Image (tube, helix red, strand yellow):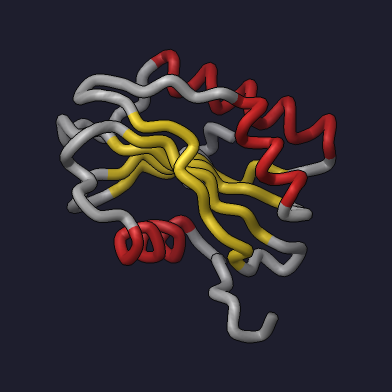
Length: 129
């Protein structure tokens, strides 16, 4: 347990993702990061892989994995191969739905990052969660 990486900021999450996510600019993916009560990383899972302009994310799959790993919190991320860091309306809606589902199960959504190979946009840092 003491060797698990602890996430304390959106920058920590971005740096962790950068170390495990190859070809960020290739096609859109949606990733789940599972955390324990101390915000230490339990693991990550690729929820979906799409094309250049989008991917379909199933909220049930997110929480199936979170429940199986006994996660206390989750952080989600997806990339924009275009390099555009601005969230779309569907990104905003999906984030709200994930947060609402998590509240029901007492699994906190700490952040949603949109990433590129160079930078990221944090929903939490921008007050969008």
